[in-house]
Length: 302
Image (cartoon, rainbow, N blue to C red):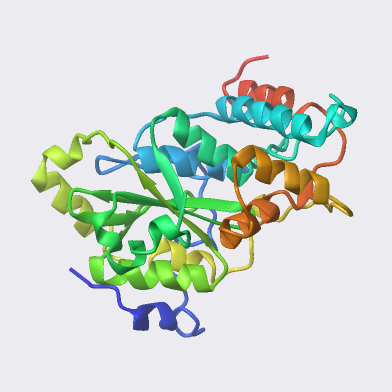
């Protein structure tokens, strides 16, 4: 079984060692590919729904869809507008937490996990100071940079990168996991550790199938998280058609208040929230209605 090392990560920078064909150079089609790979749940990319895929891949089941996350986003919007004062409560204001293409803010992801009984903590806060020293003891991580979310999940004693932009999960060795997370943080990713009562999956109860999964996911040089950042951001996450807010200071402060975040105590999490609010969609269809329409189209409804 190949063991990933930091030298493997560095090799990805060389033109002579390009990522495998199943990297972002060949975008996957989540509409056509199965949600399962050798007994492991692994949703593939559909549009800009990486937040949905990230959560479901982490929880190893179809726990959320875009409509459920949009409902959570709407509730957060309401609380943020209340925090801004009654003069700013306006139903015509665009959402800072959801876009019509399916992109969701940091706050939506954190609150979605809370509804399932999980605690999601930013790695860098005082409560998580020891996480990077022994990350293999955890069960799951979610990572975000710009407009893409993905997760790392442990099954049994094995770790996998279940990035939705890949055709199959990637095995990550214990020795490589810590280096991977540290490198992701250094490269601008926000890293969150997720804790809670993760139900045992069926493949975790079958050691033979789990070991077969590890073998099938070990035939690549790079973890998906590493290869993902070696290519320019694809169109699904480009933010095309969206503009940088000229002045969203009030919105950001309201988001901090709604999420209970003190920028002085946790500047990295505050920065992640501010980054996720940076882009806003042009005024168009209501995001929730637009997502419902697209979802119905995917399933052949009128």
